[in-house]
Amino acid sequence: MAVRTLLKMGDLRLYQIAEAVQDVQADFVKEIIGDMYDTMLKNLGAGLAAPQIGFNYRIIIFGVPTPRYADINDVPPETVLINPEVTVLTQETESYWEACLSVPTLRGLVARPTHIAYRGYDPQGRLIEREATGFHARVVQHEMDHLNGILFPFHIKDMRLLAFEDQEAFQELKQRVREGEFI
Ligand code: NI
Image (cartoon, rainbow, N blue to C red; front, side):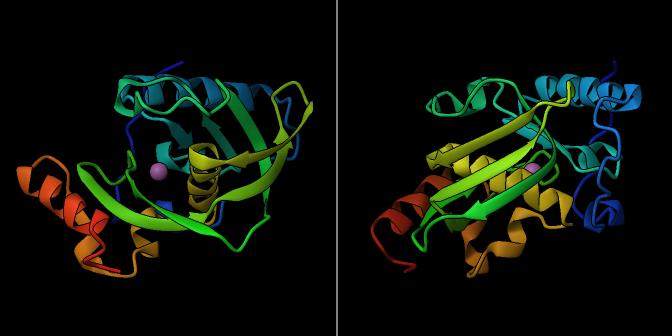
């Protein structure tokens, strides 16, 4: 187990289509997952996809409580999904200021469907099938995107809504968005 270097936006390895895992119970899969947890915990992430630490496989993890998302409590703890599939269950979307360990210090307002179903395998080969709403649905879609070479900024319709979060002006921007200025 090891904390790995996070690949950042601009690294072409983040833009590949990740490969399906043939044997979900293989030892190398467990090693990758261990490194993903170590790296996510060290960096206070809410989720991580294997390509973000340089492994081009369809593996995602999410749901570790982190102070960065203290207000979020609707995500099941410590989920591993191998070869995940997502089905959108509604036309309704919601916008949220997303962040990503591969896009440090930036946040962007991303609209995503609010209700999904997903399925995938855990490292013991058991099928996980769930429905998700709210932040839970968002984090699954965000991590799933990583497996298809997509980072959250690709979804932003108005690039003024991609912003550095470590500045006071960001609070003003968020307030203006709440007031409907950018709709
Ligand atoms: Ni991400």
